[in-house]
Image (cartoon, rainbow, N blue to C red; front, side):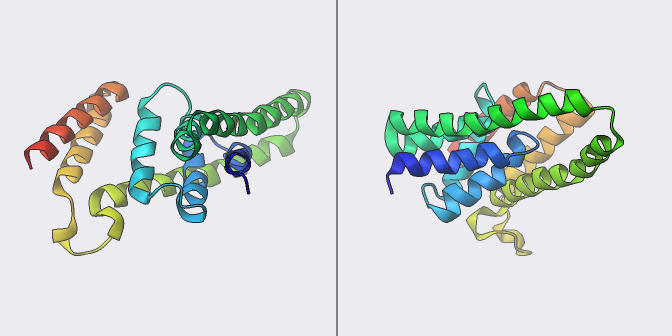
Length: 188
């Protein structure tokens, strides 16, 4: 199949199925890009998420652009980005129309209440996968403490502390964590 068609179809699935925002799209993108098509390695995928988070715009769209560029150049980036945007635009427009028309119904309120835990689970799953990769590498979780990346754990703990205790700007914390990580990894 033509690579452009594959990119379009994959990112149309991401756009159509990423209910709950960009973080909910991460497991879908990983499933298609890393596991199904092997366009990126798991390590490259982690880098992709980092870059997509740091650059302006939604994670899913930034990821689509990055993957498309890696796989098929500028044309691939355009096709993947469009594939990601179109289903979401159609779905959001339809849901907005329906919501404004039926928002006072109890069933609509109940459906939204039921969806919240599923979205939280998707986000937690993606976050846990990235933490495991950062702490233990591609081998995955193990109880062997020698496999644990202490630098990653320390940077994570410091970042979490600064975000929770002092409510610092997440962009500043990410930038500081990136700089701290670069210094540690260049020195080690």
